[in-house]
Every structure is written in structure tokens, then in C-alpha cells.
Image (cartoon, rainbow, N blue to C red; front, side, top):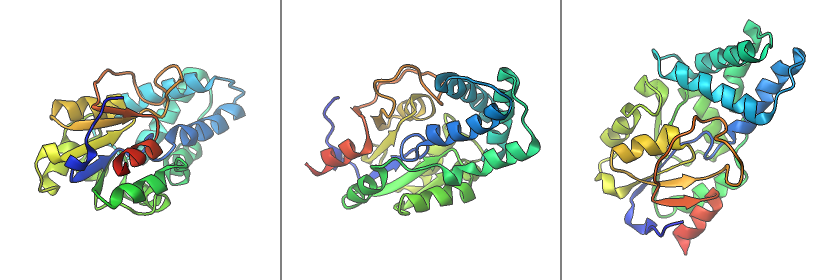
Length: 233
């Protein structure tokens, strides 16, 4: 962990899924339900890494809603691992985002950080699905930018550029906070942003539901509670 003066930032922008919402728990719950019906017994790592590969490929293509992305990724996992996926399965998985749980420390940490900072979110999601997640988090955000608004998914730079358009402060007053090196830290660093890596997978092998990538964040913390404590020390 390097030292970073959080007081020099006016805005903290966040990734949502994987950082604030436990998307791996939500994804695994949906995948396991479908896999079990076809008798597929795969490890968590295999399921998540297979899902990550399909999701990233779909998101890099022509824009689709996140509901569609999820459904297509589920079909890809099923095809790879030998599980039957129905239209009903795809639709249910596509809408399951609203049921994905928040990490236990997210709500309190966001409330603490909001005392001194304005909070934004840049999320690879649809407006309506994210609204459900935002309610789980206490609706703390002063700015919301979704992939649906942008018409593109991170690691595209377009979402970050929309954030810059909507926040009237210099980039060196914005700190981006995220779990995914692939989706967030690589593009944020290309744009000259300071970043915090919330390494939710610390101590575990593999990259889980995000494709592997390399980046050099300015600060690494294991969870949001640690970040909030650093901001108030």
C-alpha cells in the first residue's frame, strides 16, 4: 500500500460491480442454478473465468444492454461447459443484477466518504438495473454514468470522458476507486487519473469475473472499510 493524500480530491468516482456490489456472488448464484440442472459440476474459478471471457468479448462488440450481455454470456458459459440454457434462464440471469448483494462494508464506507467528498459512479450496467443496486447502497451518488448512457462498456474511455464532461473540476481532483484492473485501472491510468484498487480478491488466485490485466494503482486497499478509515484518519 502506498500513501495517498485523499484530502486533495474533490470527487471520488467508483466502479460498482465487484467494488461495492458482490457481483461474483451474484454471478455464481445464477450460473450454478443453470449448471446444476444439467449436472455440470465446475469450480467457482472455472465458472467465473469462463463468464469473464464471454462478457468481455460481448461488451467489446456492438453495444447491447447489460441484460442482453448477461444472457449471452450465460449462453456462452453453457455452451463451453455443456449446460442447456433456455430463453427463460437468459432473461432471469439478465435481470438478476438487482438481487446481487452489497459487500457488508459498502454502505457505511460510502456514507463516511460522502461527508468530505462528492461521490460518482461509472458502471457497466443499465439505468434500471443500477437503480436497484444504488438503493442497496443507500443512493449516495451525486453523479451516475452508466454504460447505457454512454453506449459503451469499460474499458472503453467513453464513460470516463462523460464523467469529465459532467464534473467541472480538474482531473487531478478526481480519484477513481475500483476493483477491476481490466475495466477500470487500465483506462483510468491512460487518462491520467489517480486510482485506488479495492482488491476484493486479495489472497485468492486468479482474476475471477474480470479478465486479467496489469496496472499500477496509487493506493491498494483490501476493502472499502479500509479506504474510509484512511480518509478520516
